[in-house]
Length: 440
Image (cartoon, rainbow, N blue to C red):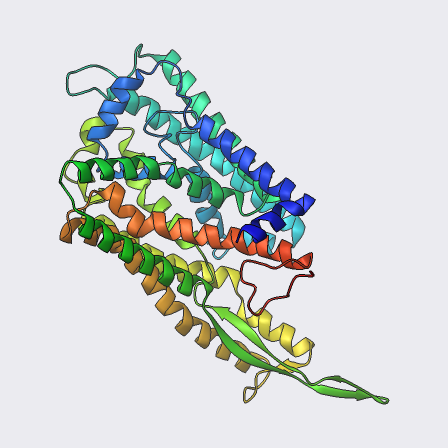
């Protein structure tokens, strides 16, 4: 492993990409610690502790603690994710967006522009809600979070948070363009990992005070290992559909005739369904910000708390739905069938054309089902650990649910990109077995 890490930094282009990505992520974490002007940070921290079990606690986890500190990156990247969901749904319903999707590069550029404008609008609306919410927050002792309430504070908060969200989006795009991995996903992953040290310290304190024991912690470590192993298995699992190419004889040469396969991933959508589902689940919180602290702690809004069965059930069902939805957007069986027919390929025993498309679609539907159900089950794991074992949600979330799925999924995608760079330059990858061997 040490040799493979040395190989990574031996390639100038790959080393530059990794260092650029790390530098941007450091900037992201700095922005998550800078609060907007006019905030009593101690009062805010005390107030957010009382709201940790609501959907604001979940939002705070996604932003790496930036929301809980009312930082300039307080909204995180979630407004962009929410608008992306809406735009992708419109691509399947409205003729205008369907036409843009078929126009190739120019159409994608127009869709990207519309998504960015939508992100500005949604960030503006959410930041206004946050400004009004902050003015209503008080500590149990009655100390207000905002030092001087009024339109000046609201204007400053809205401009700071909206600008911070767009800066975060720009940084994520720069990582995707010049760095390694998907920038948006990496920003979310780093935000989640930022809370891990605090969770570990809290668990160590519980161990020292006798609230837990070594056997219990060992059992959790074993559970964590098997969950990670199963997630990797699902994320990397594929169904191989055999493909045969027709043999053509031109003169004395024979072209084609080889056999290959079409890889259908169990989870084609990756971690996108998890992020999409989380964005939908945070809509009630966005609405509640305009009402105030009392609405956040009301009976109806408590249904969307992280430890409520209704919230977790909706989360699991949304993950299953978005897994199928995003798979349908990313993989078109009709296009694959048409490409195979043009290249002289066919599936043995299946007629080319519509029959092949239906055959691939049926296999993809069946293959996606266990992957989607497994992701939904993992999403419910923190709730099970809370109810059956009594773990704190912040600790339980790292043994399943959104945190573990995103960390493992984004980590695998990033490692695959690094692996591609290594193999293209004749170095051993992380999975040397079955791969190209490095030159000695």
